Length: 113
Length: 117
Image 1: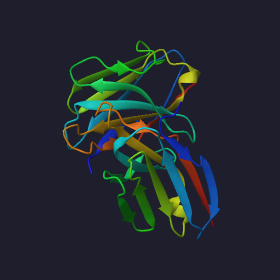
Image 2: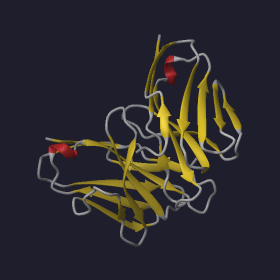
Image 3: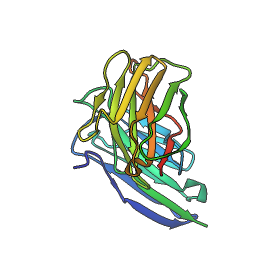
Image 4: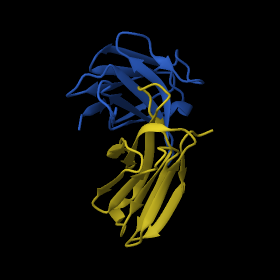
C-alpha cells in the first residue's frame, strides 16, 4: 500500500492547458516536497511546504498544502512542453523518523506541442 | 541548494561482475544517505539507508549481501552491486539530507543507469 497516493498516474495534455496533480495520504506530514524528474536524471526539488493551508507559487506552478497536512496539490497554468517530466511528492511523516522521506507514486506528465 | 554528485552516470557490465556506484555530498556533510532504485516512469523505491560509521539499514526484500553499502565518511557513500545479473539493470539514485536542518530537504544525485549484459 502506497502511503502517499498521487493522481493521476499519467497525464497527457496540449500545450497551453492547465492541470492539477494531487498527492493524498491518510497520514499527517510535518513537511511535504515536490520534485520534478527528467529521464536519466535525479529528481530536482521544486518546493517545500510546511504549514497547513500554505500556498506557494513558482512562476506558473502553484503548490498547496492541505489544512490538515495530509494532502497537497500542484497546479500548472498554461503548460509548456518543458514541463514534461515525472512529478513526485515526498514528505516527512510527523510520527516517523526524521530521516526517511516517503515518496508518492509519481505522475508522468507529457505536454504535447 | 546543496549538491550531491553521483558517479558513474552510466555503466554496462557483464553478468557476474560487480559494480561500484559513488555518491558524494560536495558542499555539506551528510550523516545519512539514501539509495533508491527506479524503474521506467515509476517512483523511487528506497533500497537502504546509509549511516556514516555504521551499518546500513536495508528495506524489506533488499538483499544486503548483494547490494553492499559503505558510508565511510560524511561526504561519501558507495553502493556495490555484487555478482550482477540482468535483472539488476535499473536506474539507481542516491540522496542526502541535511538532518539538522528543518525541514529536512533531500538532494539527489544525477543517477546511475546500470545495464547488465
